[in-house]
Amino acid sequence: MELRTIFTFLRAAELRNFSKAADSLGYAQSTVTMQIQQLEEELGKPLFDRFNRSIALTAFGESFLPLARRMYSTAQEMHALSVDPAELTGTLRIGLVESLFFSDFLKLIPKYQALMPNVVLDFSTGSSVEIVDLLTHNKLDLGSYFAESSTTQELVPLFERGANTVFVANPKHPLCQEGPVTAARLSQERFVMPEGDGIYHRQLRRLFQTRGLNLQESIRLKSTHGIVDVLKYSGGLSFLPEFAVRHDLRHGNLKVIECDLPPVPLTVTVAAHREKWISPQMQGMIQLLSSEPWL
Image (cartoon, helix red, strand yellow):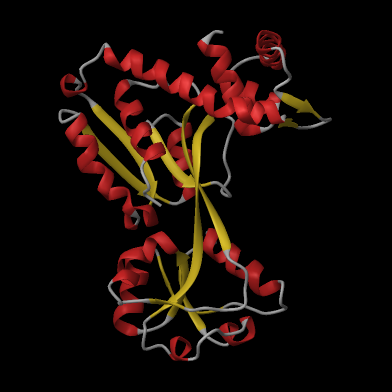
C-alpha cells in the first residue's frame, strides 16, 4: 500500500470527485481511477460508490478514512523525524482573511515558535479574493480564506473548518433588550458592514431576500477591527463571524442578537499552491491548524 495511493484516496474522499482529485494532484483522471481501483483490490472491498458526476464513500470507505488519515499523518511525522524542527530556518509566508486575526489563531503562534523558533512568520491580510490571488501567484506558502469566494485549480485545499455568522451589537442597542426578534424587525435597522461586496454582504442580503426584505447600511469600513470598535463605542448593529467577536462577547462588550433566521455557516479553507512542496515549516503550521481548535 503506497503512500501516494493513500493520499490520492484522501483527496478523492475530500473532493467527492475523481476529476477534481486528479486536478488537485496534477494527475490524469485515469491515474486517480487506477490508484483507487488498486487500493480497492488490495483491501478487497469498494471504497466509493460511483455516480455520473460524483462519488461517495461506501460504509467501508467511511470506516477506512480515519485509518488512512492516521497512516498518512504517521508517514509525514516519520519524515519530519529526520529533521530537527528547532534547527529549521527561513520564512513561512501565511495569508489570512483579516477577520481570522480575531479568532483564536493568534494562540497558535507561540506554539509554532516553540516548535520552530528560528522560522520567521510573515503574515499578509486581505479579502478572500486577494488571498487566493496571492496563493495563485506563489506569493504565499499557505493561505486561509472563505470557501465561497472564487478559487482556482492552481490551489490545493488542505482542509476546511466551519464557523457561524451572527448578528451582533452593543449590549445597549434596543434590539438587545427585546429578546428574540424577527427578520422584519432586523431589516428596520441600519447595519455597520465591511466595504465592498464580500461574503458577509452576500449572506445577509440572501437571508433578507428570502423574506422579501432589504438590507440597510449606515457605515462601511474596510477593517473588521474598525467595525467592532464602532459597535463597542458608537452603537450600531452588524453581521460578522462569531470567531471575530468572540473575545468581546466573552467580556460583555458586544452581544449576539437572537432572531428567527436560521444560522448561517461559513467554511474556512486552508490551501496551498498545487505545485508547492509541503516543507517541514509548512507541515508544522498545517499540523497546528488541523489539530487545534482555533475557530
